[in-house]
Length: 400
Image 1 (spheres, rainbow, N blue to C red):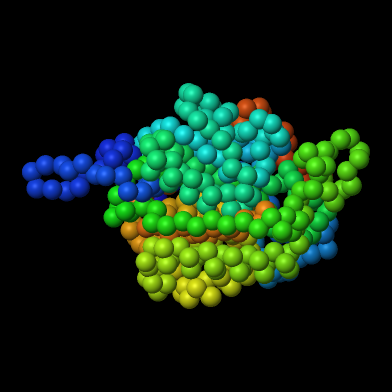
Image 2: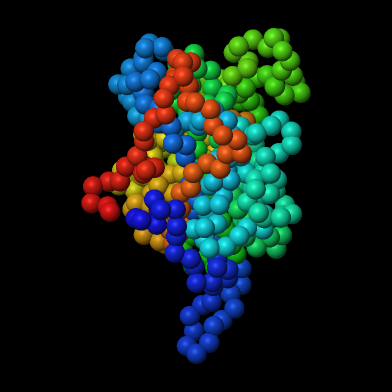
C-alpha cells in the first residue's frame, strides 16, 4: 500500500489513453463505447474531529452519534483552507494515479470558494491545465453522480478525451455549530476521478446512468439565504437561514426511496441481475440510510463499502472518497459489477452502474494559497495542532 500513503501510483502504459485489444500479431483500434475511470485521487484535511468534541456543547454523546449516524469522526479544514484547495489536491492526485492530464474539469460542490465566479476554472488553472473548459455542478450530495453522467456524455460526444471529475466540499463553512442535527454529521474532503474513452468490456467502464430531481422538495435540504431570492446582507437574515438546514425524517424517507429506485433502474438498463452486483457504494449520508437501501436491493453486507465512520458525510465528495478508500484497501477486484447511488438537495438523485476500475488511488494534501491559521476548537477557543496519523483511514486486519 506504499503507493497510497506516499502519494504515488504506477503509471498506465498508455498514459490513460485508448487501449488496444489483444490480437495476435497486431493491435486493433478500439471504438469508444463509453467512459472509463483510469485514475482516482483523494484529499482530506489533517484535522480530525471526534464525536467527543461535540458532546458537552451540544448535549450529546459519542454513543448517541454512532447509533444514529454510524459516524465516529470526521475531517475538518484548517482556517484559510477552501473547497478549491481540496479540489486541487484531489484533482492532482487523480491525474497522478492515471499518469495523464485532463482536458475538461467538472467540479461538484455545494460550497464553492465564492458565489461568483465558479470555482472550477481556478482549479483548472492551479492544476496547470491551461485554457481547458471548466464548470461547477450544483446538485448537492448527488453532484458527483451528475458529473459522472455528464463526463460520459462529453467523452462519447467527442467534446473531450479525458474529463477530470472532482467532488469537493468544506461543509464546515455552512454548518451551524449550534445545530446538533447537522453539526455532528458533516465533514470536509475531496475525491476525484479521471476518465477516458474506452470499451464497455474494460474495468472501470460506465455501463448505465440515471438521474432525477423533484423541485417540490427544495426546502427539505437548504441554505435559505445568500441567493437572489434572499440576498444575504449584513444583519438581515435570521440565523436559521444563514446555515445549512435539513428536515431529517423526510430526507431519510426520500433518500431511501430514490436511491433504491434509481439503483434498480440502472441495473435494468445495464441488463445486470441484482445478485450479480458485488460492490455497492451509496452516498455516505447516514449508515441507517445506506443499510436500508442495500437491504431493499438485496446487497449482502460483504458487498457494501464505505467510510462514513471515519470521514462523516462529505456530500458531493463522499462517493469518490469511498471509492478511493475501498480501492486503496484492494477490497474489490477490477471488473467487478458495481453500483453507486446518491440523493441530495434539490431534490436530486441518481445511480451509476459500472465495473470496478483497475486503478491505484493517490492521496495528496490540500494545496492552500495562504498559510493556515491556528486550529479553532469546537468551542471557539484556539487549540494546538492535532497530531494525526499519516494514514487517511485505518486499514482492515490483514491488509498491508
